[in-house]
Picture 1 (spheres, rainbow, N blue to C red):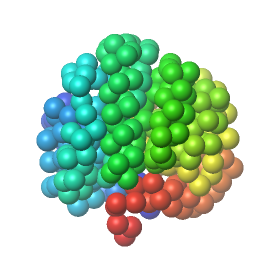
Picture 2: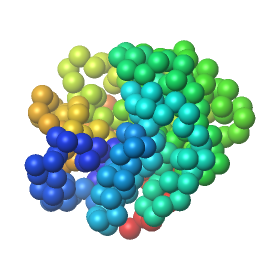
Picture 3: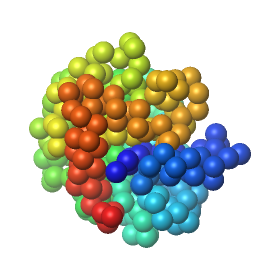
Length: 259
């Protein structure tokens, strides 16, 4: 089974041909997609996609770039929205110190609200982290000490030390098209050390198209290229990679019924 664990089909890049993109994904064998919420203010569009397509599920949350939109976002706000049908995760949330599009203290504050929502709801947390390894490690360690929560290190490209800590805390990891980039050997080195039963794959479309589509708009139909690269990196057959990532996906997103 092919599963794209992280899509942004509500993005304006798909406004002209969204239905065709979804149709191409299905034709390529993609059985399930998880549509990511990038800010609570546009959650209605995210949720609507999940509600009209049997094979699309969704999350609720605010990306660190958008944290400034609602600095006082509370865990209860997220929990209430997460009670809707087909909401299966909290996020995408976290820290991004590369662009600093939201103040770092606001990012951290909003991220902690998401962690609390994941802990209370039992839904998995989808974590975005970029150039924030030390602060992310501190927050994960502190929040985990308050009580465990399931979480996914999405599109993981950070360092091996943070990956090791996250793995010790029980994290899942998702591999994206970045793994296919020629210059991404450091990313592939971390992928080789990830826990084999907690790895899933994603496109993060419309971003990060894998080779041989690099430089174009990404879409879920390309997820097979990511899976093939993961198999190569880990020394797995394609069938083994597909089975392990499928099992890991349903263990993480356990509100989605397995076909």
